[in-house]
Image 1 (cartoon, one colour):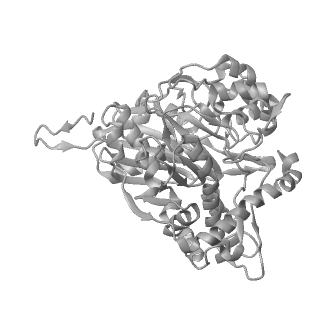
Image 2 (cartoon, rainbow, N blue to C red; image 1 turned 180 degrees about the vertical axis):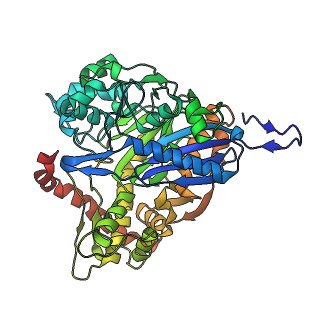
Image 3 (cartoon, one colour; image 1 turned 135 degrees about the vertical axis):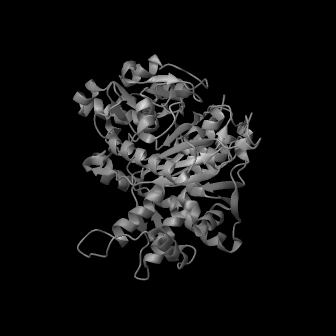
Length: 538
């Protein structure tokens, strides 16, 4: 594939470039990525999540758009690349958000965030009935799993729950809504003026039949189950499709060529998988950014309701990828730093420094394996994979007078690895393949300590991806090159490098096996307590 571009004067091969936009929970990152996989310029900005009472979490889409445009301008200015060599814009984003927009693509209210649980009660209403299995009506459960591979969560953290919340508690907004979009599709609509989506990006709305890889319409049975109208959702284009060329006004504002194409968006989990070079079936990655997930490409559709795992259509023809979203990942570290180390309160400990995460890592190094018996529970917003329970919460267990913040820091790292170990068993059964190693990407993979802790706790090799912070933008760019016919899937594989490999340390096996067993027991034995404390809040 790899159609070469030749300089007619010199005969040399010239690079093409993609502007890759990664809209994470923390804000947009924009990178200019070459067809050799090189990130030649990058800019990013921060966006706060607005936390509201009763489980609410929102973000302002205008802030996404304004800061994305600003980052694009900075990247173009600093790269010195001829804009005529920028062939496409490709967006990946956080997922399971709902953005209601009008006919012009303008948002009508803040986006409902994936941390938002206010739609849980409405999910439970539409999935209830007798006889019940895992809290679901058996007949409805069969329909959802057979058609979508998914089932509405009890917590309401996916896009369907958000739409149901808006319909029931913001009826004026629901009535005015032209279409509901995910963030990546919201951005592509702002770039092109065309409101579209794909089968893969619409998966969290659970309105499409995923039994075939490329479906272009919404399913009547699913619409009836949810009580939603087909007209409220966008036109579906191919999973590996092109939305169109950039809007002339946007091109002029950003200084881009009017022929620049905009390809169909993708979730950040799938982008990080591609950007990590794991494009062959069964090549597993662990990603730790704000969230925590385990994923790989697979050649089939499958669902494991017991462990809340499923497969989602990928942008690669007739292929799917494992969705193993566990919930809070790096958010646990952020929470600890914000509320325990640098809180904005009367103790006045000061503003969080720029190197706070490096300091956290150094603190964790000072504690022994097992953190002197301290166990952290990472379910700050409930648990998803491998056991969905919206009521469970976080905490430190087994605190003593000898506990200090070094133990707490290491315990948080160990908890993320414990949850990945718990997820690994069901994941291996799901793909029917032994798992002997993982590629590790995201901000968490910057830490050699966290990499080694994962190797020790999970008893597998951890392959730390080079430049792990940029796997999402690299993946979004590689997808664009593939969609436009400039790069094959096999060529993508060779563009991601492994920086370092971590092997299990046998001397830590005993303590971590003991700690892991108790980690699982803490989840199991405290579920009733968490339910008593939190059920009425959902």
